[in-house]
Length: 490
Image 1: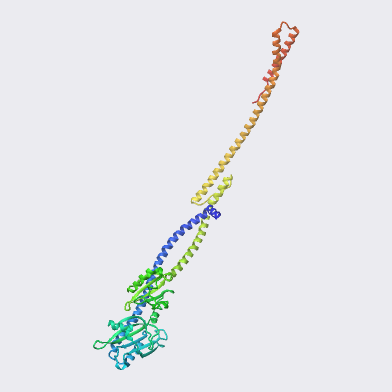
Image 2: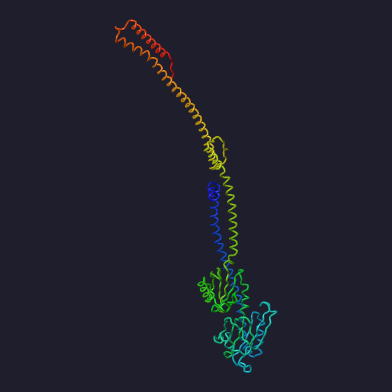
């Protein structure tokens, strides 16, 4: 790792390329973040609009079915009072179910002993047995019966309009009664009281829809592959839910995810309060957008649960593709930047190598002039002129050094000659000293002898001494004359 770092630090082209890539990367990251942020907002708004529109369309579809149910039921409640006969009531129920494909059941239930001959109970009921989806009625069958004796007076669909005195929708219920014609599915009903000409309550007309059939209306309510639909009753009980085990057994408050308990409680209160809106919260461990709106007539509320991963699936794929493209683009950019920078700094590398050779003492290798007009071209040409000046200066210095070396050699030889001359002079002086000292000693000695006893010495001795002294003087004179005529060199 240290070698790689050292290699990068030594290569200007790599560092410049990396610097360019870092700057471009930061710019692209900021630009992409800006673009993807607004793209995400756009997708979020589009998802909200799409889901809200789909929810509204489905609610309108269900409201349309309920409108038709209400119109049919209200009409039959008025018409039936004109023909209060058991056979007529049976015919009315059968014809109503046959002519309205969305109805599962239709019942006309009378007050106790309304028909004395029929006893306490009389309820004409027609039930549709569906074969294919509700839009295709060719394989449906209808059964019409007078229901067996059971206390339907306490049933929700009978007691509620009797108590309120007005038509109403009742919450979903299980319509099964042993010994009677019953639907195996959970029903919801619209109930309308019947009154005679005097305004007395004589019974109720009940039109029933199955929640299973209503759930089918939600089948198209899938804006995303993993989205789901739920419908809450007046107390928050699940009337429609993708998990059928929760139907009529759990409500939105008891089923809340602990991580999103507060959000779910707020959502539940908003839905039960008849409000519309959107909330982002945790559902089954993942974030999801929940779009909800009420069904005004029933007090129920519809909701679409769209996982956030589905809402932003295309965005996430686009994001991954974008980052892959950016990564590949940055690698290509790094490669092209490296090549471009290498080409741009090639003269600098040549200058660096030439500077190293100059540092090693090689000044005479020529460098081609640059034709570039930028700083690198000017630097190259300035370096060439500097190299030429330096080479000329080095040549002049070398020439001066050679001259100085020659002079130093001459001075050294002169110095050695001078030393030899001095040595010879010293030897000569010593020789002369010895040569002169002997005759001087003779002269000096005979002079002392003659001074001490000239009159006492025989003439022969005096003549001998005088002759020797003259000879010694002549020898000295000869030496001095030889010294005077001997040439000396310094």
